[in-house]
Amino acid sequence: MSEPTANTLSFSQNVNYQVDQAIAAMDLRSDTAAAIKACSSTIQVTFPVKIRDKIEMFTGWRAVHSTHRLPAKGGIRYAPYASQDEVEALASLMSYKCALMDIPFGGSKGALLIDPGKYSRDELQMITRRFTTELVRKGFLSPSTNVPAPDVGTGQREMAWMADTYKHLFPDDINYQACVTGNPIQHGGIHGRTEATGRGVQYAIQEFFRHSADVKKARLPPGLAGKRIVVQGFGNVGYHATRLLSTEDDVKIIAIIKSEGVLVDENGLNIEALHAHILEHKTMRGFPSASFNENGIKALEMECDILIPAAVEAQITSENADRIQTKLIVEAANGPVTFEADKILCKKGIIIIPDIYANAGGVTVSYFEWIRNLSHIRFGRMQHRHEEMRSREFAHLLEDLTGKCISDDVRKRVIRGASEEDLVNSGLDDTMRSGYQQLSELLNRNDKVQDLRTAGYMIAIEKISRSYLDVGVY
Image (tube, rainbow, N blue to C red; front, side, top):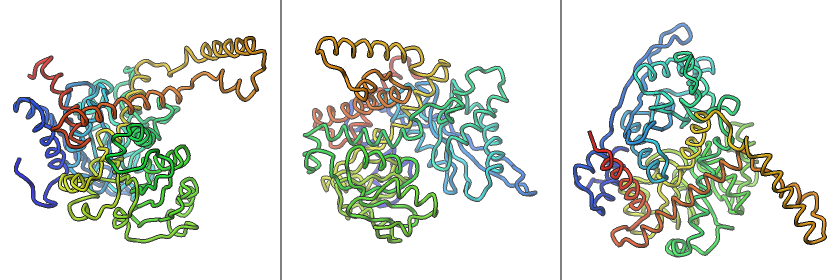
């Protein structure tokens, strides 16, 4: 590809340029590279639904980037700006993300062109069930080949409707709950899935700060505690990431950016109080002890230690990249930094933890949920009491050896068996740690690799190409 001019790239072109940059640093055959980049299939569906005594037409898409592993995996978003290009770009990101994190899925993504805020719950259910039926009939939704999850504008509710629709279409499929992930807990969901992407962002940042050489490159002092963080987006990902970082890692969330503006408090925002305020008042305005400004996009340029774009794509572009004043950018959203902006930021010495790693927590825990629903048993069910019994025996042994009694509080913590959520978070932490270690190791040993994003794509492409070469490309 030739070099682009400023702000001329679509989302899918941005992703492909980043992939090309990684391929240029690899010893990869051009035909294999072309096969990896190509989007396998995309479907567009248009269907009618009767809303308030009037027939409305809805358009949706589902793209499959790669089926080198099955099922293909990726969320479905409901948004008034959705497009085929966006869906195909997100599908490709899912392929690379899953490959990087050693999750045995291909990449897929879906979207419905709709503003969900304009419809009632019952209307959204009718629309969702009809959309699901279209996808199922055309082979783009099943537990074995294509598994959606929540995304922008969707959540547990929509996943439950989709799973129930699939169940009615295939009443004999005992694995119907595995046709989607992100289910409600009482309908096949897994503890820890709701906050998984945000917690994955937290684990990614924690692991970065365990690598002192990488922290030094970012010109940051050691340790995560006390770091000043600006976050764009306060949806599911932004809320849980900020809540966990502020309560468990003692950071200061000095600004939250939303579409309505930015809320700033240099002493650190109380995230739980802010969340409650927004639920009650439907706005950030009026939140005590913080200043509000309507120019939210400008707040991306605030001086801070860590900037976390957790909203939508293309928020940092060639127009504002040179004014970004952070040391570390953590891409909690998909594609928030454009290809042109990425080059500018790298020249400025700003370290970027890329989206294909930083926001992989959601698909990681989706994998755990999918496995759980195929096995039809919750994690920890068979060993929970056994672990408690062994821990109780260990506590008695300590008392016998020391001649001292363990306090009731310590005893409870020692003998408690791991819950499903404990196991999920443990698996997520391990996955995020090993993922970053791969990135850092390649970055620090290969002179052709200049940044973590290129390292991530190189690792992912190598794994996908190995799969193609092992089984052949047909």
